[in-house]
Each structure stands twice: as structure tokens, then as C-alpha cells.
Figure 1 (cartoon, rainbow, N blue to C red):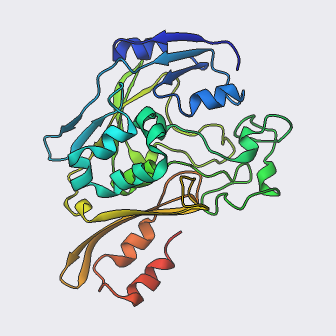
Figure 2: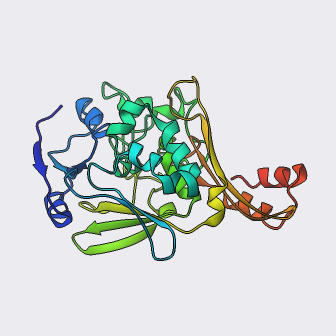
Length: 299
């Protein structure tokens, strides 16, 4: 681990000011960023602790939920166990619970989960592997190497790594909205636009500018999200990253599918919304034939 300066923010404005600059990063639970720094994959010169800032899950005027992501209260466990999340957005609660052991969930923050880096073996190997995500322009050893768990959707010649988060798959399916604070003020962003496809710059995981802080995630009042689930296939029964996962919600009108949400994890560089499959299912009878048609639209 390279030396770094530790700073603690007392307000959002403090955090944005202290976190300005390309070599600074925000620190929540530290379950990913500390590992990256220990392995010298990341070399941040400044860490800004945001755990003193307040966070809560509150109702929006439209009837959705606003999940505050900054502060010690914004742990994965706190959000997964929140009554409103469990009853109105069960796919999100189940995705969080599928993502890690209780010990890690108790430390990890939701904001940090959104920004975690890939677990590609070559990304973590600093002793000779070529990785465009770690060092742009060096190549991608995963393309011809061990790539069983790598992307089959949205990849590029520069990178075939997958996004590791379970939670982000559910948030993509739920049409969540990201609240962001930066030096130029506050802005919101549809969750599906937060993470980038690799293109020729796989080192850039998100569209966030340097020093921008995610302060909250807004869940829209999606009534049929109460009838949703999250399923995950992994190499072992204990906690492991997804070979493939799916977040799904469905609203029925008699025998027909009135609305549906489908998103996949473990298969792409970012959480993958299956919009073509959703469109193929809306208004159709809930049948095996409809499912087969939708399957052809998964990409």
C-alpha cells in the first residue's frame, strides 16, 4: 500500500471539497477500496471518510423511497433489512443479501457497492498481467486467458471484465435514480446511465466526474416491484460472485403480462437491462411460447 492522507468530512460540502482531484477517493466501509490499495491496484493519495455524514431511508412525495447513501447508517445490512425495502422492493433486499456474508454487509456501504471494481483476476494481478482497466493501453490478457466468468454482453476489444455487484442489478431493474453532489452542484442520473460500457476506456467505470459524491438512490413508486425476486447462480453455495444473476418483477392483468422488469448480472461490463425481452413480453399471454420469444431478445 502506498502512503495516503486520511481526511474526515463533516458535511457533504466538506466531502466534495476534500475529494476534489484525480487522486482522491471517498471512504465508506472500505471493503473494496482498501483491498485495492493493499494490492497497489489503486494508488489514491487522499481518502475522504464520509461515515460521519447522515443517511436514512425516507419516503418520497411520489410514494417511492429515497435511500441516503452517505454515513455509517447506509450499510448494506441496514438497507436490506429496512421494512420498506423488504416489502416494496424485495428484489433489492434479496440481491444485497446474496452479495456477501453478514460481516461484510455490516461494514460495506451502499454507495461503495455501486462503485466497486471488477474482480477480474488480471485486474488484480499487478505482477505482469496486462489490463487496460488497471493500466490503459497495456492490453487485455483475459481475452485469450482465463475468461470463463467474463462478459458475453457489452464487452469490447479493450476489456471483457464483468461488473461484480448484485445490488446494482436490482437497482437497474427498478429504474432507480442516482442523486449526485459535486463542485458544480447537485444533479440526478437514471441508474442505467451511471456505469459505462468499456469501449476503449475500460479504466472509467462510471460517468462520475472527479470529486462527485453519490448521496442517495431514489426508488420510484413501482407498485408491482413488491412481486419481484432476485436469483443468482454461483460456483459454490457460500458467498461468491455471480456466474449469472437475474432481477425480475412482473405485473399481471388476468392472463396477460401488463408490465415487467428484467436485469442481468455477471454477464456484462455493467448491470444489463433486458429491455428487448421486456418489450417482447408486455401485453402477451404468460406462456412458454412468450418466454421463448423473449429469450431471443435478451441481448
